[in-house]
Length: 589
Image 1 (cartoon, rainbow, N blue to C red):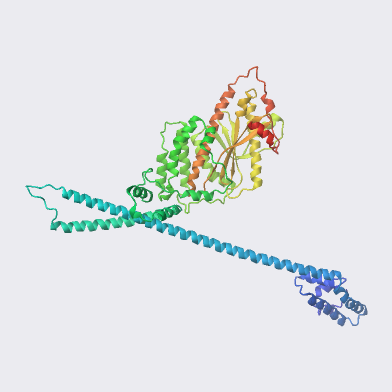
Image 2 (image 1 turned 60 degrees about the horizontal axis):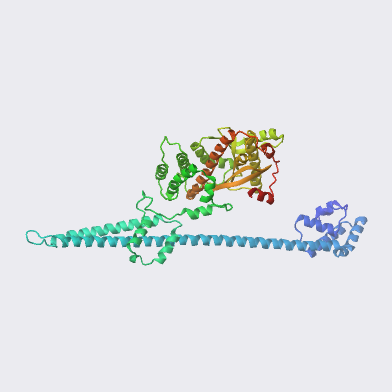
Protein backbone atom coordinates (compact mmCIF):
# COMPACT_ATOMS: atom_id res chain seq x y z
CA UNK A 1 0.00 0.00 0.00
CA UNK A 2 1.38 3.38 -1.07
CA UNK A 3 0.85 5.93 1.73
CA UNK A 4 1.85 9.57 2.07
CA UNK A 5 5.26 10.05 3.71
CA UNK A 6 3.87 12.38 6.40
CA UNK A 7 1.37 9.67 7.35
CA UNK A 8 4.12 7.21 8.38
CA UNK A 9 5.26 9.56 11.15
CA UNK A 10 1.89 9.21 12.90
CA UNK A 11 1.62 5.44 12.58
CA UNK A 12 2.65 3.37 15.62
CA UNK A 13 3.73 0.34 13.59
CA UNK A 14 5.38 2.03 10.64
CA UNK A 15 7.51 -1.00 9.70
CA UNK A 16 4.43 -3.13 9.11
CA UNK A 17 2.84 -0.66 6.65
CA UNK A 18 6.12 -0.15 4.83
CA UNK A 19 6.76 -3.86 4.34
CA UNK A 20 3.22 -5.14 3.72
CA UNK A 21 1.87 -4.94 0.18
CA UNK A 22 -1.56 -6.36 1.07
CA UNK A 23 -2.14 -5.63 4.73
CA UNK A 24 -4.69 -7.62 6.68
CA UNK A 25 -5.50 -8.47 10.27
CA UNK A 26 -3.74 -11.85 10.01
CA UNK A 27 -0.55 -10.32 8.59
CA UNK A 28 -0.64 -7.65 11.30
CA UNK A 29 -0.88 -10.31 14.01
CA UNK A 30 2.03 -12.25 12.45
CA UNK A 31 4.10 -9.05 12.46
CA UNK A 32 3.34 -8.46 16.13
CA UNK A 33 4.28 -12.05 16.96
CA UNK A 34 7.64 -11.67 15.21
CA UNK A 35 8.29 -8.47 17.14
CA UNK A 36 7.92 -10.49 20.34
CA UNK A 37 5.50 -8.19 22.19
CA UNK A 38 2.15 -9.69 21.22
CA UNK A 39 -0.58 -8.91 23.77
CA UNK A 40 -4.20 -9.91 24.29
CA UNK A 41 -6.64 -10.49 21.42
CA UNK A 42 -8.83 -7.42 22.07
CA UNK A 43 -5.80 -5.14 22.40
CA UNK A 44 -4.22 -6.23 19.14
CA UNK A 45 -7.49 -5.96 17.21
CA UNK A 46 -8.06 -2.47 18.60
CA UNK A 47 -4.55 -1.40 17.57
CA UNK A 48 -5.05 -2.65 14.04
CA UNK A 49 -8.35 -0.76 13.75
CA UNK A 50 -6.73 2.38 15.16
CA UNK A 51 -3.99 2.20 12.54
CA UNK A 52 -6.64 2.05 9.78
CA UNK A 53 -8.45 5.10 11.19
CA UNK A 54 -5.18 7.05 11.29
CA UNK A 55 -4.48 6.25 7.64
CA UNK A 56 -8.05 7.24 6.73
CA UNK A 57 -7.70 10.66 8.40
CA UNK A 58 -4.43 11.51 6.59
CA UNK A 59 -5.60 10.43 3.15
CA UNK A 60 -8.81 12.46 2.76
CA UNK A 61 -7.54 13.87 -0.55
CA UNK A 62 -6.53 10.42 -1.94
CA UNK A 63 -9.77 8.70 -2.95
CA UNK A 64 -8.13 5.42 -4.03
CA UNK A 65 -6.30 4.91 -0.74
CA UNK A 66 -9.33 6.14 1.21
CA UNK A 67 -11.60 3.66 -0.57
CA UNK A 68 -9.16 0.79 0.08
CA UNK A 69 -8.90 1.64 3.76
CA UNK A 70 -12.68 1.90 4.11
CA UNK A 71 -12.99 -1.53 2.52
CA UNK A 72 -10.48 -2.91 5.05
CA UNK A 73 -12.55 -1.40 7.86
CA UNK A 74 -15.70 -3.03 6.51
CA UNK A 75 -13.89 -6.40 6.32
CA UNK A 76 -12.46 -6.03 9.82
CA UNK A 77 -15.37 -7.75 11.57
CA UNK A 78 -15.30 -10.64 9.13
CA UNK A 79 -11.53 -11.05 9.57
CA UNK A 80 -11.91 -11.17 13.35
CA UNK A 81 -14.20 -14.19 12.98
CA UNK A 82 -12.21 -15.83 10.21
CA UNK A 83 -10.75 -19.31 10.62
CA UNK A 84 -7.16 -18.12 10.19
CA UNK A 85 -7.39 -15.53 12.97
CA UNK A 86 -9.13 -17.97 15.32
CA UNK A 87 -6.46 -20.63 14.68
CA UNK A 88 -3.78 -18.03 15.32
CA UNK A 89 -5.15 -17.17 18.75
CA UNK A 90 -5.73 -20.84 19.61
CA UNK A 91 -2.08 -21.57 18.89
CA UNK A 92 -1.03 -18.66 21.07
CA UNK A 93 -3.08 -19.99 23.96
CA UNK A 94 -1.49 -23.43 23.58
CA UNK A 95 1.97 -21.87 23.40
CA UNK A 96 1.33 -19.94 26.59
CA UNK A 97 0.23 -23.15 28.32
CA UNK A 98 3.38 -24.91 27.17
CA UNK A 99 5.53 -22.04 28.43
CA UNK A 100 3.79 -22.12 31.80
CA UNK A 101 4.29 -25.88 32.06
CA UNK A 102 7.97 -25.49 31.23
CA UNK A 103 8.34 -22.84 33.91
CA UNK A 104 6.62 -25.11 36.41
CA UNK A 105 8.90 -28.00 35.49
CA UNK A 106 11.94 -25.75 35.86
CA UNK A 107 10.79 -24.56 39.26
CA UNK A 108 10.11 -28.14 40.32
CA UNK A 109 13.61 -29.14 39.18
CA UNK A 110 15.16 -26.29 41.15
CA UNK A 111 13.21 -27.36 44.24
CA UNK A 112 14.37 -30.96 43.82
CA UNK A 113 17.98 -29.86 43.47
CA UNK A 114 17.63 -27.74 46.56
CA UNK A 115 16.14 -30.67 48.49
CA UNK A 116 18.96 -32.95 47.28
CA UNK A 117 21.57 -30.44 48.41
CA UNK A 118 19.90 -30.18 51.80
CA UNK A 119 19.77 -33.98 52.04
CA UNK A 120 23.47 -34.25 51.19
CA UNK A 121 24.32 -31.66 53.83
CA UNK A 122 22.21 -33.54 56.35
CA UNK A 123 23.94 -36.83 55.49
CA UNK A 124 27.37 -35.21 55.86
CA UNK A 125 26.37 -33.85 59.26
CA UNK A 126 25.09 -37.26 60.36
CA UNK A 127 28.29 -38.95 59.22
CA UNK A 128 30.44 -36.36 60.98
CA UNK A 129 28.40 -36.73 64.16
CA UNK A 130 28.70 -40.53 63.92
CA UNK A 131 32.48 -40.35 63.57
CA UNK A 132 32.76 -37.96 66.50
CA UNK A 133 30.55 -40.13 68.69
CA UNK A 134 32.53 -43.22 67.73
CA UNK A 135 35.83 -41.51 68.49
CA UNK A 136 34.56 -40.34 71.89
CA UNK A 137 33.33 -43.83 72.80
CA UNK A 138 36.62 -45.33 71.67
CA UNK A 139 38.59 -42.84 73.74
CA UNK A 140 36.46 -43.64 76.80
CA UNK A 141 36.96 -47.34 76.21
CA UNK A 142 40.73 -46.90 75.95
CA UNK A 143 40.70 -44.89 79.19
CA UNK A 144 38.74 -47.63 80.93
CA UNK A 145 41.13 -50.32 79.71
CA UNK A 146 44.12 -48.30 80.87
CA UNK A 147 42.53 -47.75 84.28
CA UNK A 148 41.98 -51.49 84.61
CA UNK A 149 45.62 -52.26 83.83
CA UNK A 150 46.86 -49.47 86.11
CA UNK A 151 44.72 -50.68 89.02
CA UNK A 152 45.86 -54.27 88.50
CA UNK A 153 49.53 -53.27 88.34
CA UNK A 154 49.29 -51.25 91.56
CA UNK A 155 47.55 -54.11 93.38
CA UNK A 156 50.17 -56.61 92.20
CA UNK A 157 53.02 -54.36 93.34
CA UNK A 158 51.48 -53.77 96.78
CA UNK A 159 50.77 -57.48 97.35
CA UNK A 160 54.30 -58.41 96.30
CA UNK A 161 55.81 -55.81 98.65
CA UNK A 162 53.67 -57.09 101.58
CA UNK A 163 54.72 -60.65 100.90
CA UNK A 164 58.44 -59.75 100.90
CA UNK A 165 58.17 -57.83 104.16
CA UNK A 166 56.40 -60.75 105.83
CA UNK A 167 59.26 -63.07 104.84
CA UNK A 168 61.96 -61.04 106.58
CA UNK A 169 64.18 -63.15 108.81
CA UNK A 170 65.29 -62.22 112.32
CA UNK A 171 68.79 -60.91 112.84
CA UNK A 172 70.71 -61.56 116.11
CA UNK A 173 67.62 -63.09 117.63
CA UNK A 174 65.45 -60.04 116.99
CA UNK A 175 62.95 -59.41 114.26
CA UNK A 176 63.56 -56.48 111.97
CA UNK A 177 60.66 -54.06 112.45
CA UNK A 178 58.27 -53.87 109.54
CA UNK A 179 57.62 -50.22 109.97
CA UNK A 180 59.75 -47.16 110.64
CA UNK A 181 58.65 -43.60 111.01
CA UNK A 182 61.41 -42.43 108.66
CA UNK A 183 60.03 -44.68 105.91
CA UNK A 184 56.56 -43.17 105.94
CA UNK A 185 57.35 -39.90 104.21
CA UNK A 186 59.61 -41.59 101.65
CA UNK A 187 56.97 -44.21 100.86
CA UNK A 188 54.22 -41.63 100.53
CA UNK A 189 56.30 -39.45 98.24
CA UNK A 190 57.17 -42.42 96.00
CA UNK A 191 53.54 -43.52 95.95
CA UNK A 192 52.32 -40.06 95.02
CA UNK A 193 54.99 -39.74 92.33
CA UNK A 194 54.18 -43.18 90.91
CA UNK A 195 50.44 -42.46 90.87
CA UNK A 196 50.96 -39.11 89.18
CA UNK A 197 53.21 -40.70 86.54
CA UNK A 198 50.60 -43.41 86.01
CA UNK A 199 47.86 -40.86 85.51
CA UNK A 200 50.03 -38.85 83.10
CA UNK A 201 50.97 -41.92 81.03
CA UNK A 202 47.34 -43.04 81.11
CA UNK A 203 46.08 -39.73 79.72
CA UNK A 204 48.81 -39.48 77.07
CA UNK A 205 48.29 -43.06 75.88
CA UNK A 206 44.54 -42.56 75.72
CA UNK A 207 44.98 -39.37 73.70
CA UNK A 208 47.30 -41.16 71.30
CA UNK A 209 44.84 -44.01 70.93
CA UNK A 210 41.92 -41.67 70.34
CA UNK A 211 43.90 -39.74 67.77
CA UNK A 212 45.19 -42.84 66.01
CA UNK A 213 41.82 -44.51 65.46
CA UNK A 214 39.70 -41.68 64.02
CA UNK A 215 38.92 -43.87 61.03
CA UNK A 216 36.05 -45.92 59.62
CA UNK A 217 36.51 -49.03 61.87
CA UNK A 218 35.14 -47.05 64.80
CA UNK A 219 31.73 -48.56 64.06
CA UNK A 220 33.07 -51.99 65.01
CA UNK A 221 34.58 -50.57 68.19
CA UNK A 222 31.36 -48.89 69.26
CA UNK A 223 29.38 -52.09 68.71
CA UNK A 224 31.76 -54.07 70.86
CA UNK A 225 31.79 -51.36 73.53
CA UNK A 226 27.98 -51.31 73.74
CA UNK A 227 27.86 -55.07 74.36
CA UNK A 228 30.64 -54.94 77.00
CA UNK A 229 29.73 -51.90 79.08
CA UNK A 230 31.35 -53.06 82.32
CA UNK A 231 35.04 -53.03 81.45
CA UNK A 232 36.09 -53.32 85.07
CA UNK A 233 34.99 -56.98 85.17
CA UNK A 234 37.11 -58.10 82.22
CA UNK A 235 39.32 -61.07 82.91
CA UNK A 236 43.04 -61.22 82.16
CA UNK A 237 42.70 -62.77 78.69
CA UNK A 238 40.16 -60.18 77.52
CA UNK A 239 42.30 -57.35 78.89
CA UNK A 240 45.29 -58.72 77.07
CA UNK A 241 43.44 -58.96 73.73
CA UNK A 242 41.93 -55.50 74.20
CA UNK A 243 45.32 -54.05 74.99
CA UNK A 244 46.88 -55.65 71.91
CA UNK A 245 44.02 -54.32 69.76
CA UNK A 246 43.72 -50.74 70.97
CA UNK A 247 47.07 -49.89 72.61
CA UNK A 248 49.51 -50.20 69.73
CA UNK A 249 52.74 -49.54 71.59
CA UNK A 250 54.93 -51.98 69.67
CA UNK A 251 55.15 -51.12 65.95
CA UNK A 252 57.99 -53.50 65.20
CA UNK A 253 56.06 -56.75 65.72
CA UNK A 254 53.44 -57.66 63.12
CA UNK A 255 52.09 -60.70 64.95
CA UNK A 256 51.31 -58.93 68.24
CA UNK A 257 49.59 -55.90 66.73
CA UNK A 258 46.45 -56.94 64.84
CA UNK A 259 44.73 -53.75 63.76
CA UNK A 260 41.45 -53.01 61.99
CA UNK A 261 41.57 -52.41 58.27
CA UNK A 262 40.26 -48.93 57.37
CA UNK A 263 40.98 -49.44 53.68
CA UNK A 264 38.21 -51.97 53.10
CA UNK A 265 35.33 -49.49 52.87
CA UNK A 266 37.47 -46.94 51.04
CA UNK A 267 38.48 -49.49 48.44
CA UNK A 268 34.89 -50.58 47.89
CA UNK A 269 33.83 -46.98 47.17
CA UNK A 270 36.59 -46.62 44.60
CA UNK A 271 35.54 -49.74 42.64
CA UNK A 272 32.94 -48.40 40.19
CA UNK A 273 33.41 -50.90 37.41
CA UNK A 274 31.20 -53.92 36.57
CA UNK A 275 31.53 -56.86 38.95
CA UNK A 276 34.32 -59.18 37.91
CA UNK A 277 34.77 -62.71 39.25
CA UNK A 278 37.55 -62.88 41.84
CA UNK A 279 40.10 -65.52 40.92
CA UNK A 280 40.13 -68.28 43.51
CA UNK A 281 42.99 -70.53 44.49
CA UNK A 282 41.57 -73.42 42.46
CA UNK A 283 41.18 -71.22 39.40
CA UNK A 284 44.65 -69.80 39.90
CA UNK A 285 46.15 -73.28 39.99
CA UNK A 286 44.73 -73.93 36.54
CA UNK A 287 46.80 -71.10 35.11
CA UNK A 288 49.98 -71.50 37.18
CA UNK A 289 52.84 -73.96 37.03
CA UNK A 290 54.49 -75.44 40.10
CA UNK A 291 57.48 -73.13 40.30
CA UNK A 292 55.39 -70.02 39.64
CA UNK A 293 52.92 -71.03 42.35
CA UNK A 294 55.81 -71.55 44.72
CA UNK A 295 57.27 -68.17 43.81
CA UNK A 296 53.97 -66.43 44.25
CA UNK A 297 53.08 -68.14 47.53
CA UNK A 298 56.53 -67.49 48.96
CA UNK A 299 56.06 -63.76 48.49
CA UNK A 300 52.36 -63.30 49.07
CA UNK A 301 52.61 -63.34 52.88
CA UNK A 302 55.30 -60.68 52.69
CA UNK A 303 53.09 -58.61 50.43
CA UNK A 304 50.23 -58.97 52.91
CA UNK A 305 52.49 -57.86 55.72
CA UNK A 306 53.68 -54.90 53.68
CA UNK A 307 50.44 -53.54 52.27
CA UNK A 308 47.86 -55.10 54.56
CA UNK A 309 49.00 -53.54 57.83
CA UNK A 310 47.87 -49.96 57.18
CA UNK A 311 51.37 -48.59 56.76
CA UNK A 312 49.87 -45.35 55.50
CA UNK A 313 48.83 -44.49 59.07
CA UNK A 314 52.49 -43.73 59.78
CA UNK A 315 53.44 -40.21 58.89
CA UNK A 316 57.08 -40.97 58.05
CA UNK A 317 57.72 -41.92 54.46
CA UNK A 318 61.11 -43.39 55.39
CA UNK A 319 59.44 -45.92 57.71
CA UNK A 320 57.12 -47.11 54.94
CA UNK A 321 59.98 -47.31 52.45
CA UNK A 322 62.26 -49.19 54.83
CA UNK A 323 59.48 -51.66 55.67
CA UNK A 324 58.87 -52.43 51.98
CA UNK A 325 62.60 -52.90 51.35
CA UNK A 326 63.11 -55.10 54.40
CA UNK A 327 60.13 -57.33 53.54
CA UNK A 328 61.27 -57.83 49.93
CA UNK A 329 64.99 -58.25 50.51
CA UNK A 330 66.81 -60.76 48.29
CA UNK A 331 70.44 -61.60 47.63
CA UNK A 332 72.11 -60.20 44.53
CA UNK A 333 73.15 -63.63 43.24
CA UNK A 334 69.64 -65.15 43.43
CA UNK A 335 67.84 -65.29 40.08
CA UNK A 336 64.94 -67.66 40.73
CA UNK A 337 61.41 -66.71 39.74
CA UNK A 338 60.50 -66.16 43.38
CA UNK A 339 63.36 -63.70 43.89
CA UNK A 340 62.52 -61.91 40.65
CA UNK A 341 58.89 -61.63 41.66
CA UNK A 342 59.97 -60.13 45.00
CA UNK A 343 62.04 -57.63 43.04
CA UNK A 344 58.96 -56.69 41.03
CA UNK A 345 56.86 -56.34 44.21
CA UNK A 346 59.45 -54.06 45.80
CA UNK A 347 59.80 -51.56 42.97
CA UNK A 348 56.09 -51.50 42.12
CA UNK A 349 55.20 -50.65 45.72
CA UNK A 350 58.03 -48.13 46.12
CA UNK A 351 56.93 -46.28 43.02
CA UNK A 352 53.30 -46.19 44.18
CA UNK A 353 54.20 -44.98 47.68
CA UNK A 354 56.58 -42.31 46.37
CA UNK A 355 53.74 -40.64 44.45
CA UNK A 356 52.08 -39.67 47.73
CA UNK A 357 55.15 -38.52 49.67
CA UNK A 358 54.37 -34.81 49.35
CA UNK A 359 50.67 -35.12 48.44
CA UNK A 360 47.78 -34.15 50.66
CA UNK A 361 45.13 -35.50 50.41
CA UNK A 362 46.68 -38.74 49.23
CA UNK A 363 44.53 -39.15 46.11
CA UNK A 364 45.65 -39.00 42.46
CA UNK A 365 43.73 -36.85 40.01
CA UNK A 366 41.80 -38.99 37.51
CA UNK A 367 41.25 -36.05 35.17
CA UNK A 368 44.01 -36.85 32.69
CA UNK A 369 44.37 -37.72 29.03
CA UNK A 370 44.82 -41.26 27.76
CA UNK A 371 48.57 -40.95 27.10
CA UNK A 372 49.16 -39.29 30.47
CA UNK A 373 47.33 -42.22 32.04
CA UNK A 374 49.65 -44.66 30.24
CA UNK A 375 52.86 -42.81 31.15
CA UNK A 376 52.13 -41.75 34.73
CA UNK A 377 50.06 -44.65 36.09
CA UNK A 378 50.43 -47.81 33.99
CA UNK A 379 54.01 -47.64 32.75
CA UNK A 380 55.69 -47.77 36.23
CA UNK A 381 54.02 -51.12 36.99
CA UNK A 382 54.83 -52.55 33.56
CA UNK A 383 58.43 -51.33 33.72
CA UNK A 384 58.93 -52.89 37.15
CA UNK A 385 57.68 -56.19 35.72
CA UNK A 386 60.09 -56.02 32.78
CA UNK A 387 63.02 -55.21 35.10
CA UNK A 388 62.27 -58.41 37.00
CA UNK A 389 61.69 -60.52 33.87
CA UNK A 390 63.71 -58.96 31.01
CA UNK A 391 62.95 -61.70 28.47
CA UNK A 392 60.42 -59.44 26.72
CA UNK A 393 60.67 -56.17 24.83
CA UNK A 394 58.30 -53.21 25.13
CA UNK A 395 57.33 -50.97 22.20
CA UNK A 396 55.34 -48.00 23.47
CA UNK A 397 52.47 -45.74 22.28
CA UNK A 398 50.88 -46.06 18.84
CA UNK A 399 53.17 -48.78 17.56
CA UNK A 400 52.38 -50.45 14.23
CA UNK A 401 51.39 -54.12 14.59
CA UNK A 402 53.67 -55.86 12.11
CA UNK A 403 51.82 -59.18 12.24
CA UNK A 404 48.83 -57.62 10.41
CA UNK A 405 50.99 -56.85 7.38
CA UNK A 406 52.49 -60.34 7.49
CA UNK A 407 49.03 -61.93 7.83
CA UNK A 408 47.84 -59.95 4.80
CA UNK A 409 50.75 -61.43 2.87
CA UNK A 410 49.99 -64.96 4.08
CA UNK A 411 46.28 -64.85 3.22
CA UNK A 412 46.42 -62.28 0.41
CA UNK A 413 44.02 -60.13 2.38
CA UNK A 414 43.75 -56.37 2.82
CA UNK A 415 43.20 -55.76 6.52
CA UNK A 416 43.86 -52.18 7.50
CA UNK A 417 46.89 -51.25 9.58
CA UNK A 418 46.49 -51.09 13.34
CA UNK A 419 48.42 -49.26 16.04
CA UNK A 420 48.50 -50.34 19.67
CA UNK A 421 49.32 -48.51 22.88
CA UNK A 422 51.88 -51.12 23.98
CA UNK A 423 53.29 -54.04 22.01
CA UNK A 424 55.20 -56.74 23.93
CA UNK A 425 57.61 -58.94 21.95
CA UNK A 426 59.26 -62.17 23.03
CA UNK A 427 63.04 -61.79 22.73
CA UNK A 428 63.66 -65.45 21.88
CA UNK A 429 61.99 -65.19 18.45
CA UNK A 430 61.01 -61.47 18.24
CA UNK A 431 57.35 -62.43 17.85
CA UNK A 432 54.40 -60.42 19.13
CA UNK A 433 53.10 -61.92 22.34
CA UNK A 434 50.83 -59.34 23.99
CA UNK A 435 48.98 -56.18 22.97
CA UNK A 436 47.80 -53.50 25.39
CA UNK A 437 45.00 -51.11 24.47
CA UNK A 438 43.82 -48.29 26.76
CA UNK A 439 40.18 -47.39 26.07
CA UNK A 440 40.27 -43.72 26.97
CA UNK A 441 41.20 -41.84 30.17
CA UNK A 442 40.52 -43.36 33.61
CA UNK A 443 37.57 -41.11 34.42
CA UNK A 444 35.62 -41.51 31.18
CA UNK A 445 35.23 -44.43 28.78
CA UNK A 446 32.66 -44.50 26.00
CA UNK A 447 30.89 -47.60 24.69
CA UNK A 448 32.01 -46.88 21.13
CA UNK A 449 35.67 -46.62 22.14
CA UNK A 450 35.51 -49.72 24.33
CA UNK A 451 33.80 -51.98 21.77
CA UNK A 452 36.08 -50.70 19.02
CA UNK A 453 39.16 -51.56 21.09
CA UNK A 454 37.81 -55.07 21.76
CA UNK A 455 37.47 -55.77 18.04
CA UNK A 456 40.86 -54.20 17.42
CA UNK A 457 42.54 -56.38 20.07
CA UNK A 458 40.87 -59.52 18.71
CA UNK A 459 42.04 -58.78 15.15
CA UNK A 460 45.60 -58.11 16.34
CA UNK A 461 45.63 -61.24 18.51
CA UNK A 462 44.39 -63.44 15.64
CA UNK A 463 47.00 -62.01 13.26
CA UNK A 464 49.77 -62.56 15.83
CA UNK A 465 48.56 -66.13 16.39
CA UNK A 466 48.51 -66.87 12.66
CA UNK A 467 52.01 -65.46 12.32
CA UNK A 468 53.27 -67.67 15.16
CA UNK A 469 51.69 -70.79 13.68
CA UNK A 470 52.74 -69.84 10.15
CA UNK A 471 56.36 -70.67 10.97
CA UNK A 472 55.41 -74.23 12.05
CA UNK A 473 52.66 -75.42 9.73
CA UNK A 474 53.73 -79.06 10.12
CA UNK A 475 53.37 -79.15 13.92
CA UNK A 476 50.91 -81.29 15.86
CA UNK A 477 47.34 -79.95 15.85
CA UNK A 478 46.93 -80.43 19.60
CA UNK A 479 50.09 -78.42 20.26
CA UNK A 480 48.91 -75.73 17.85
CA UNK A 481 45.63 -75.43 19.76
CA UNK A 482 47.61 -74.62 22.93
CA UNK A 483 49.51 -71.74 21.33
CA UNK A 484 48.11 -68.44 22.61
CA UNK A 485 48.49 -64.73 22.13
CA UNK A 486 47.46 -62.29 24.83
CA UNK A 487 45.79 -58.92 25.11
CA UNK A 488 45.20 -56.46 27.93
CA UNK A 489 42.36 -53.97 27.69
CA UNK A 490 42.28 -51.06 30.13
CA UNK A 491 38.79 -49.66 30.74
CA UNK A 492 38.77 -46.92 33.35
CA UNK A 493 40.90 -48.22 36.22
CA UNK A 494 40.39 -51.94 35.44
CA UNK A 495 42.90 -54.12 33.56
CA UNK A 496 41.57 -57.29 31.92
CA UNK A 497 43.80 -60.03 30.47
CA UNK A 498 42.43 -62.43 27.86
CA UNK A 499 43.99 -65.00 25.55
CA UNK A 500 43.19 -66.03 21.97
CA UNK A 501 43.85 -69.56 20.72
CA UNK A 502 42.83 -71.90 17.92
CA UNK A 503 39.67 -73.84 18.83
CA UNK A 504 38.74 -75.64 15.60
CA UNK A 505 38.99 -75.20 11.87
CA UNK A 506 38.74 -71.47 11.16
CA UNK A 507 37.47 -70.84 14.70
CA UNK A 508 39.25 -68.97 17.46
CA UNK A 509 38.57 -68.96 21.19
CA UNK A 510 39.00 -65.85 23.39
CA UNK A 511 39.10 -66.50 27.16
CA UNK A 512 39.30 -63.92 29.94
CA UNK A 513 42.00 -65.02 32.39
CA UNK A 514 42.21 -62.43 35.17
CA UNK A 515 41.53 -58.78 35.95
CA UNK A 516 42.63 -56.21 38.51
CA UNK A 517 42.10 -52.57 39.48
CA UNK A 518 44.74 -49.82 39.52
CA UNK A 519 44.40 -47.71 42.71
CA UNK A 520 44.27 -43.91 42.59
CA UNK A 521 44.24 -43.37 46.37
CA UNK A 522 46.80 -44.32 48.98
CA UNK A 523 44.06 -45.91 51.09
CA UNK A 524 43.46 -48.38 48.22
CA UNK A 525 47.00 -49.80 48.31
CA UNK A 526 45.52 -53.24 48.98
CA UNK A 527 44.54 -53.33 45.29
CA UNK A 528 48.15 -54.31 44.65
CA UNK A 529 47.32 -57.80 45.91
CA UNK A 530 45.19 -58.30 42.79
CA UNK A 531 47.78 -56.56 40.62
CA UNK A 532 50.52 -58.98 41.72
CA UNK A 533 48.17 -61.89 41.10
CA UNK A 534 47.46 -60.42 37.64
CA UNK A 535 51.15 -60.33 36.72
CA UNK A 536 51.80 -63.75 38.25
CA UNK A 537 49.28 -65.17 35.77
CA UNK A 538 51.00 -63.28 32.92
CA UNK A 539 54.41 -64.62 33.92
CA UNK A 540 53.09 -68.17 34.15
CA UNK A 541 51.48 -67.91 30.71
CA UNK A 542 54.71 -66.58 29.19
CA UNK A 543 56.73 -69.44 30.69
CA UNK A 544 54.27 -72.06 29.45
CA UNK A 545 54.27 -70.58 25.94
CA UNK A 546 58.07 -70.59 25.85
CA UNK A 547 58.11 -74.30 26.76
CA UNK A 548 55.48 -75.00 24.11
CA UNK A 549 57.48 -73.18 21.44
CA UNK A 550 60.53 -75.32 22.22
CA UNK A 551 58.40 -78.44 21.86
CA UNK A 552 56.93 -77.27 18.54
CA UNK A 553 60.33 -76.35 17.11
CA UNK A 554 61.69 -79.82 17.91
CA UNK A 555 58.65 -81.68 16.56
CA UNK A 556 59.31 -84.08 13.65
CA UNK A 557 56.16 -84.88 11.65
CA UNK A 558 55.35 -88.50 10.85
CA UNK A 559 53.32 -90.28 8.21
CA UNK A 560 50.27 -90.62 10.48
CA UNK A 561 49.51 -86.87 10.57
CA UNK A 562 45.93 -86.69 9.31
CA UNK A 563 45.23 -83.01 9.90
CA UNK A 564 46.81 -80.14 8.01
CA UNK A 565 47.31 -76.94 10.00
CA UNK A 566 46.99 -74.85 6.84
CA UNK A 567 43.30 -75.75 6.64
CA UNK A 568 42.72 -74.61 10.22
CA UNK A 569 44.12 -71.10 9.89
CA UNK A 570 41.77 -68.34 8.83
CA UNK A 571 41.91 -64.55 8.79
CA UNK A 572 38.56 -62.90 9.64
CA UNK A 573 37.43 -59.61 8.18
CA UNK A 574 37.22 -56.34 10.06
CA UNK A 575 33.71 -57.11 11.34
CA UNK A 576 34.43 -60.06 13.59
CA UNK A 577 31.60 -62.62 13.61
CA UNK A 578 30.97 -64.39 16.91
CA UNK A 579 30.37 -68.12 17.17
CA UNK A 580 26.85 -69.42 17.76
CA UNK A 581 25.67 -71.16 20.93
CA UNK A 582 25.83 -74.56 19.21
CA UNK A 583 29.43 -73.97 18.19
CA UNK A 584 30.23 -72.83 21.72
CA UNK A 585 28.80 -76.08 23.09
CA UNK A 586 30.94 -78.05 20.66
CA UNK A 587 34.04 -76.17 21.76
CA UNK A 588 33.55 -76.91 25.45
CA UNK A 589 32.27 -80.45 25.00
